[in-house]
Image (cartoon, rainbow, N blue to C red; front, side, top):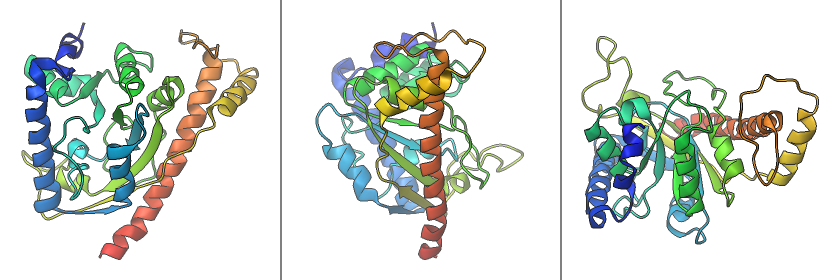
Length: 286
């Protein structure tokens, strides 16, 4: 049992009256505001859609935001733009975080648990233990953020093939979440991977331009997509990976693969369109 799992209690809202969570999230939110809005210049397209969905979506309706991943500080810096609510811990996102980075010792585990992070073992598969925890947060109507590319890439290139974890959350959630795509550019300059001797800088860099493009919610016709996946899977012969059969839909492994691939491709297409739009958005800010 990993440290992240052992300290799941630290991520509960009632832990020590919620005071440690409030202190951590307000501190991290203040840090994000200083770096993104004071030390650097951040421009956001369609910010009102994100803020509206964070503040006032229907009760019990979960929100799932997805974005590209350009630096180790994307989260929390991408929430540090002017006007975004960072002082209310109840509005803060839950986020999937790498177990080997954020939960590698007891101090980190406690801190990131207080910061509403869920440990994910990269390469551990879409049915690993903590994916159930992410599903529980969606079932509670919470806001969850994921980086479906799976790892940081600071290359200015098309959106990479997405991992299927995010797609599986969308398909398996008890209530289908609002899925909001986001593309950002500039955090790779604030926290470059190869700054000095192949290492990151000890502190975020300043005087950089950050651009964030918030899209519109992605519509998924999941009943139709499931039927299409089942039909397509009948002609496939794939080696089993011992996934469980999902209930009540009764989809076998091949059908699940087709479904998760289709959902991921739809998200990737939308994110790539946001990437293209962001280039004209950045030019308009010059």
